[in-house]
Image (cartoon, rainbow, N blue to C red; front, side, top):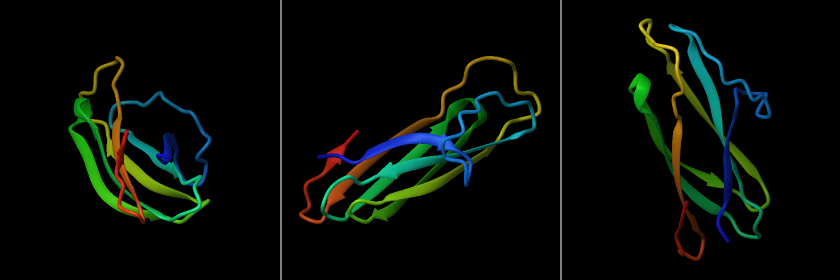
Amino acid sequence: MPLCAYIGGAAPHFTEKGHVFRPGETVRKQLVILNDTREAATCKYVWSCAAIDAQGKGEIAVPAGEKQFVEVNARCRRDFKPGQYRLTPRLTSAPAAGKKTRW
């Protein structure tokens, strides 16, 4: 079974759903990764927002039955134009047994 993940609000308010940002402002979000299994898992992640040329990547261990948070911070350019922009995460998990799951 794969891990569950979503884009949450800035620490410590991971349930915050703000989505309006101004030019020059820093976008502060978190990847919230939930492991609802009985074994620990490792999660590799990559996130990007092409509109503001921001990206990050890493790996995090998620204990069985726990959640982990990965901070996502990106500064909007001063010439940022109004519109809809997408923050895109990609995650791959591997349980202790070694079977990989990608979503």
